[in-house]
Image 1 (cartoon, rainbow over the protein chains, first blue to last red):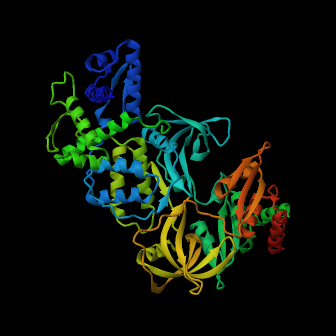
Image 2: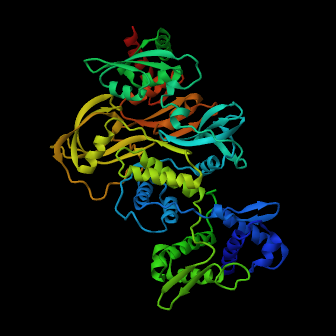
Image 3: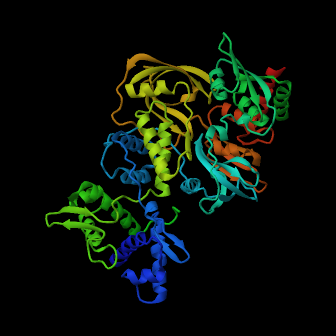
Amino acid sequence: MEDRFERLTNLVTFLLDQRNGASFAQILEEIPGWPEGEDARRRAFERDKRVLRDEGIPLIEEKGLYRIPPERFYLPDLELTEDEQVALRLAVAAVPGSSELGANALNKLTLGTGAGGDEPVPVVAALDEQPILPILHAAIRDRATLRFRYAGGDEVREVEPALLFFREGNWYVVGHDRLRDARRSFRVDRIDGDVEVGPAGSFEPAATTAEEAMPRQAWLYGDAAEPEQATVEVDAVLAAKAIADIGGRGTVERRADGSAVITMPVTNREAFRTWVLGMLDHAVVLGSPELRADVIAWLESIR
Amino acid sequence: MSGRPKTDLGARLRRVLLMIPWLLEEGGSTVAEIARRFETTEKEVIRDLTLVMCCGLPPYGGGDLITIVLDDDGTVEAWPGPFFTRPMQLTPREGFAVLAAGRALEAVPGTAQRGALASALAKLEAALGASGTLAVDLEAPPHLATVQRAATAGERLQVTYYSAWRDDVTERVVEPLVVHSRDGRWYAETRDVTDPAAGPRERRLRVDRIRSAEPTGETFEVPPTPPAPPERLYVPGPDAVEVTVLLPPTASWFADWMETESVEELDDGRLRVRLFVEGEKVLERLLLRVGPEAVVESPPELAGVGRAAAERLLGRYR
């Protein structure tokens, strides 16, 4: 164990120093502590490589030559101010799930200069944790394509990922779907099986935002060219909720009794119906005639 | 990537690669202090330092990696060499963890030091080549800031609250203890003191269902340590009824979205979902949204809930 650890540490420093890379034979020659026998040495080297990669050390292998590029190995000094260090520390404490990894990261970022103290911090937000998320995020950073199956479908999607975002309890990856030749959002927990990550630098990044990629209002999904205009009456009990839901994408007429008449664009009838029916007796669709007929026909099919 | 447990070797390598730049930054330390900081034993620290003194570049003549002097009294001095003067780059998992936490806190209204957080995250993203790659969207309902302020300042609030379980609106007086976000929704854990005779009751409010919130002018003592948010948001109360519903495959979104006890996929692709409901309103919402293919299997007395609700709503369209 002691020998092996010494060998590993020497391997890291040696490979950091090899701008042009070193062959396995050179590594064997320069670094002491290998077992006897060619096969055993090969196996020992494979194990060492695995430890280095598991620890996130960027070990590059090209044409049988190995190196660790220093510019990727070292964390640049971000010159964080004391306030910035405190802010990051608070963030890691306030969002559970990130705590252990976040603490490692903070130690590296602040080198234990210790700003931030130990006062208790209320937990403010829980983000769903999935092991695949850092892999997806790294692919976005590296501009590496993703290949995966999605939501029970048979086809393999090939996506140039641009953004990872969290909304309403779910993580989404947004990117250019090469098959569809269009931007798509994928819910991360619906990705089936493993994700295959392509080589880095495979595409030009296309910046996007969560709001642009996926409007918060589900009734605005869909590719309908011309939206229908819906008019919905919501009583005083849920008027404020309904107005908050449309998020400014529509017009509101408040009445003296607290109720509201909302006029809003709809490109996805099913989502619109789901939203209205969730309000039970508090909402009625006044128009358009087609949208009203759609809700009536739906209710009659249940009755 | 997180499947295989990290080996002891990996953990030790990680520790040493952080310990060296830290030692250099400090200019020196003691074995005891290092052990405390890196959560290990003094024996391990001595072992690590002794080893680091031997490592470097071939031909290992000394002075290559770092110069460390370890005194008998436990003081440690360090001078830099060509390696490990800086810590290692963040791993993808570390980078993701701290960025996601930072973006989440930034999305919380009323966050102190928002400017410092934003500039720290900008620096971090630039260093990781990750600018604009990660976003956290925690929509802030209208009364969130009021409830958060009341929790921090110990103010009692008079709230008008819509209960989706009962589909009614009530007036309550509450003492908000902690405000948190789960699955993208904001909750306030409160003490409900509406009825002084009955004594305080714990009550969880969904902040987006608060229709109005006003301080009453009374105060309460803020607990010194904020209570931890609950593990599970919904614990069935004494009045909860267990319901089994069959849903078509297209309604799988519903099973993700609601707090269910179990979801079983049948051979024909349909889903058998068990959940607890208090009152019929939650069940009505489910059945009306999923449509005619949703069937209540049990209990039999709730089998007609969807039909009755559809009939009642149709009354508003005649």
